[in-house]
Image (tube, rainbow, N blue to C red):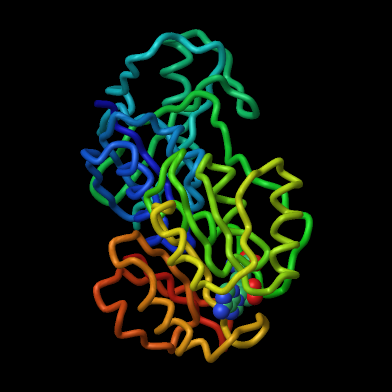
Length: 311
Ligand SMILES: C[S@@+](CC[C@H](N)C(=O)[O-])C[C@H]1O[C@@H](n2cnc3c(N)ncnc32)[C@H](O)[C@@H]1O
């Protein structure tokens, strides 16, 4: 089984790590992970680029060959690339002369392969990743980035696409499964889910929001169903959905039928307990019904900290 590495972005480290693990486990439940600082190393049958294309908070990814202590020990079990570049990533607490290390290893590999060095568009990138305990050697062929949907109509209360995408990934759904967002607003969660091949159903009690979502979906050629109803509609379609991923009303910018606290309590009482639930709400609502859930706090500004709950 190959080893892959994922260097997480500085933002939301715990969320980023759990997102990588949730995506991997949805394809390979036996995947194993270790992490140190912003580096996650996984052993799984899933190629790293499958996970990288979905993950929101991963900066770099590739295969791990092993560890090294001296540059002269470096060995890459791959055939000679047409062109390559070396990149050093220091995730340790010590200062490292990265450019010297990069040059030294670049010279060794150039001598071995006699390939062109291309910093802007290499066929192969060799990574030297330094943590406080180890030095890892990794590589990747051409990186394919995220495939992002277009959003033509936006609203101030919409959820950031990064959090939306990450929440979809935390649900552990893979292609062909069905996600429901019963407070879909402008459709951000639906768009991110469908861009990853997940079927979706959106619900919103505000007809204008349903129209906006439909426009946003149509712009991408997506076929999610959008139902103009209250969240209670979920009880009628629960056998068709695999997970609920949603962003609850805050009681400020977006319309709500009742107070946010009452609404969440009622919402949690009607949804099927066995369905995976990923929801985001404003911190301070203290929802007892979610005591067993994993929670992540996301600070936005002094009057808004969000909580993502995964149950
Ligand atoms: C925070 S917004 C969702 C924003 C959405 N994530 C986006 O990115 O656009 C909450 C949505 O819940 C809808 N809503 C409020 N009360 C509802 C209810 N009882 N049933 C269904 N939808 C409701 C509002 O119309 C609003 O669009």
